[in-house]
Amino acid sequence: MTVYKLRAIWYTLSSTLVLGSLIAFAIFGLKVGIDFTGGSMMALRFGGDRPSAIEVERSLDGMDLGSIIVQPVGDHDANIRMKTLTEAQHAEVLKKFSDTFKDVSELRFDAIGPAIGAELRTKAIEALIVALLAILAYIAFSFRKVSVPVQNWKYGMITVLTAFHDTIVPVGVFVILGKWANWEVDTTFVVALLTILGYSINDTIVVLDRVRENLHRMSGSFEDIVDVSLRQTYVRSLNTTFATLCGIIAVYFFGGASLKPFALALGIGIATGAYSSIFIAPPLLVTWEKFARRKKQ
Image (cartoon, rainbow, N blue to C red; front, side):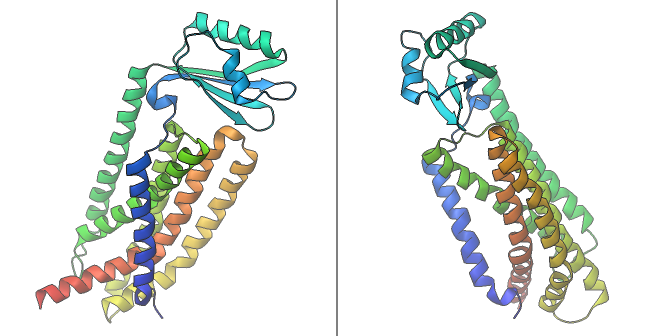
């Protein structure tokens, strides 16, 4: 049985994932970090037992720091987010912590103004849009000599659709993690999405390019040619994905707390990309060809 014969299963699964991600995003939105909103983030390490989030917040009572968010990390660390601090305020906060908790040290301090955060958010969205448009144009150009039975621009459109599929699923997961686990997204999340786009496109193009080659080498129905092309390439896609995921899993477990969101987003996106390149792009190409043929009849 070909992958196309089971297309209803693949389409239903993908539609559920994409629709669920879009609904979650529309209802809850992403929990963005200070990279996009502006503010200050202090990473602290406590020598003894780490105080509770409430104790950390109470130690800063009386200081005009706006909303304070304390996020425990590991066994002894904590990330504290608050409004943008001046150097004087930063020093005062550190002194307050040292006086209250004694054995405490600062691991990192980042401060970003709201204007810079808004600009980063805009640039991130623009980068994703430009990347998708450039992909569409490049693939349409690369497949310009292929017009039968599927027009060249449709190859590009399918690649963009699968790329969207592969990026929206990690977004949906991080919406849920932001809502119930307080995970925030920052510029590294955007880097992860752009990397996912690259892997997704690579996997999809491997299959579609083999279809393009086999159209000139083989005879038979378009469905059979697509199926043969997929059988010739899916092992390569799975091997590449497995090797990449091994490295990502290592980064997630051994790379430190700051790299976990990046590694998780990348891992989900690359795994989803391998799935879509095998179970979504080829059936979608055949579906589009059959629909166009019926329309002409």
